[in-house]
Each structure stands twice: as structure tokens, then as C-alpha cells.
Amino acid sequence: MLKNTKERAIMLGNFFESLLKFLGLKKKHEPKGPRLTQPSGTMREIRDRITAPDIPSITPRVQKLFIKPESFRKPSRIRRLEARPFQKPAKKKPGIGALQFEIEQILKEAQALQKKLATVKPKLAKPKVPKPKKKMPKRKRRFAFKPLTRDEVRALRQKLKQRKPLQDFEIERLKQHLKQPVAEKAEQELRALELDKIRKSLEEPKPRQPAPEQAAFQAAPQVQQPAAAEESIDDQISETEELLKGLEQDFLKRRISEPEYRQRVLDLDQKLRELKIRKKKQEQLGLKPKPMPVVPQAAKVQAQEQAQPQVSAEMQRFLEKRFGKSDRQKLESLEEKVQELMKRFHLSEREAEAEISKLDNSKVLGNFDKLIDLIELEQKTQRLMQEHLELEKQKKLQAEEKPEFGTGFEPGMPKGKKEEVKAIVAELEKHRIVTDFDQLLELVQRKGRVSEKEASAELQIPRERIRQCIDILEDSGLVRVEIPPIGPVRIFDLNYIPPKKQKKERAKK
Image (cartoon, rainbow, N blue to C red; front, side):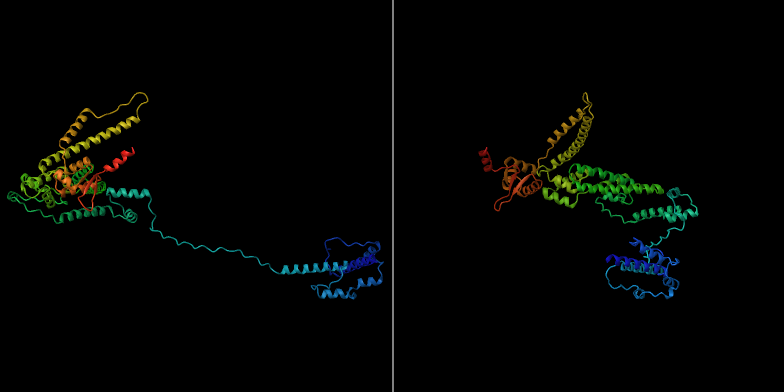
């Protein structure tokens, strides 16, 4: 029974398929997939008869249907589906016909969608166009003409140095690029500037000279010391060079500190450099220094005597305080000695005071001569020490370059130099000045501990002077000082150990 119903369903499905093809309701091409086949030959024959209407074996009734398709009436089910093509059919029991119908509906929907897609233009995504970057404003050219090359600039500078007349276009280029005046104008301006400087220096007010004390000097023609502006540049250069040499000697003798020495050297070097530049400019411009007035020889000698460094009021007060006011003649001779000392060794007043404070009050005039000789000997020893250091350097260099076999030449101090050193050492011992500082330091080192009262009594020096010496020795780190709440000041040697500690150390040993 089931078999017969299945065969009938297949037959009806094939019939309706052929009918749809005939009426043009189905596409010519068949859907993909397995073709439905009839299980029996009789059903195939029936299908062939239906699909082939020209065969005379078809019954006249069926033939009429094919001849007059208008009279053919579709089944109500098909008409309902055509009226509502996109509506889902009612759910029925699955069968082969229902599956075939669903396939057809899907094909129709696909066809309709294809038509819609053909008519509708696709919306293409617009590509993102990057925003245009802000353009930098074009820089204006500085010059309307072509800029010069390095070679052209060098050529123009050489022409300017040679002071040759330039052509008009070269002058314009020179103004724009080098920003310098024309050669002739430049020369005139430079000359005018130098002359203005010289005039200003000459027009400066001259320092007043002190009134002469002697009548003979008043009778002679008065000669003013030339001002700094009137002095020739060569004299100023030589003076600064001498100052540099004297400064170096002061530093070697430890009269000035290292930072002060460096600062003074920098100032003098700068001054010397400026003077040399000024001299060179004057030579280039052809300016000659103003000739100095001729002065008689007698007036020159008196002017030199007046120009000698006088002892200031502060130095006079220092000498009066140090050696007393009682003997006026002694003070005048001391002033002369101090003046000679400052002039001979290029010392300042402070440095001279430091040297004088080392002298003994009782033998001050004799010690002054010793002090001058002692300073000269110090200079000699420093010179010999420098030579000795140079010889030591040579020894080291030659020791490094010594040959493999044998010994190299070892330079030593010549005999003449050795004898000179021995003579200087003997002179130093001979001219040695024993100051208050030396006496106090020697006493402290001998005893280990001394009070201020004991030191003044033993050395026969006033207590005020002892206090000054103690302060200086303590600052220099040679002694240790204790100030008790009651009693005099105590001075200790740096290596002093109390007797109790000494006993304890001996007991431990």
C-alpha cells in the first residue's frame, strides 16, 4: 500500500513539473541534485507521453489540454501559492511533492533577489582622504641678488685690506654681506677713533704734585711726572713685565698666597695684551708718540729723589709702636732702611711689616742690614733649588732612556755650584736672626709646657708681645694653647705628654 502511494506521488510530481515547464512558469535549467526516477517502467511511459504531446497515442482529452492551455485550470492550491508567493505554506506531513514545491519557492525567491540586486547600486565605502598638512610659509629671501660664495667673500676682504678702490656693484655686495663700510671710509673712521682716544687721554686732569720742601728744588725748573696717558707705550709694557717678574719672586718667597698671585698675574697679563694691541694699531695707522720734553740733569735727579717711595703714615705709626717714640734719630734711620728694603725687593707695606716684626727691639738697626742680606741669600737659594730640580728631572729622563748594557751619563751638580751652596748655608747661619717667635717656640719645645708669666720672665719680653707671639704660633699650628678659668695662659708643645700618662704607658710596657 505504501509503495503504491509513493509511486503515485512521484508520478504526480513529474506531471506537474512538466506542466510548469510547458506553461513557462519554471526555468529551463533544472535544479542541481539527484533526478527523481520512476521505480517502474509503466510510470516512465506515462511521463514520456505527458512530456511529448505530439505523440498520437495521447488521448484526445489530454491533447485538448495541450492545444488550448487557456482552458487549463490550475489547481486551487497552486493558485493560492502564486497569489502569496512569499508566504510560508502550511505545515503538512513531509512528502516528495512538498519538498519539490519548497525547492521551487526557494528558486523564485533567489530570482527575485537577483533582480533587486541588479537594480540597486551598491554603496561603496568611500576611502578616507587624509587631511592636507599645513604648509609652512615660504621664507623671504634676504637679498634680492644671488648670495656670495666663500671665495668671493675672501676676495672682497683681501681687496678691503689692500685699500684699493672697489667697483660700485662690489661695494653694494660688501655693504649687504660683510656689513662694513667702504675701504676709504673705514680707514678714515679708524683713524678718527684712535685720535679721539688719544685726545681724551691727553685732556684728562693731571694729578697734582706735592709742593717741594727744599728751596733748591723750587729754584730749578719744576718737572711734572708724566701722566699714565702721556707715558709711551713701550715704557708701560716694560713696567708691566717688571711687575710680573717681581710678582713671581714674591710668590716663590711665599710672601703672597696662591689665589692672590693668580689674580694679579691675570690682571697684569690682560693689561700687557691691551698695551701690545694698542701699540700695533698705532704702528699700522702711522701714529707717532708725542716726544717728551728735555729736562736738565739736575732736575732729573731731584725728580727721581722725589719719586722714590716714601714711607706712609701707617708705616710710621707701626715703627713708633714697635720701637718707641723716644729716639727720633733712630726712627728716621729706620724709615730710610724700610724705604730701601721696599724699593730693593719690590715689597708692599704689609710684607715689609711682616719682615720687620721678626726683628729684635734691642738690635734693630744691626738686624736690618742682616735682614737685607738674608733676603738676598734667600733669592740665591731659590735660584739654586730651581737648578737642582731641573737636574733631578734630567736624571729621571736619562734613567728611563738608559741603555741595556752599561750605564748612562748621570749629571750631577758641578763642584763650583756645590761650593756656592755651602757658602750660602754658612752665610745663612751667620746672618740668622733670632726673633721673639723663635725664642718662645724653642722654650716651649724644651720644656713641653710653659705659662705666659714664666715665658715673659725667662725671655725678658713684655707680656703683650708674648701674647702676640702665642696667637701667631697657634694660628700657624706650631703650639697648643689652653686658657684656664683662673690663672695665666698655658702653652703646650704639640708632642707634649703629661707625666701621669707617661708613667701609665711605662707600667703597661
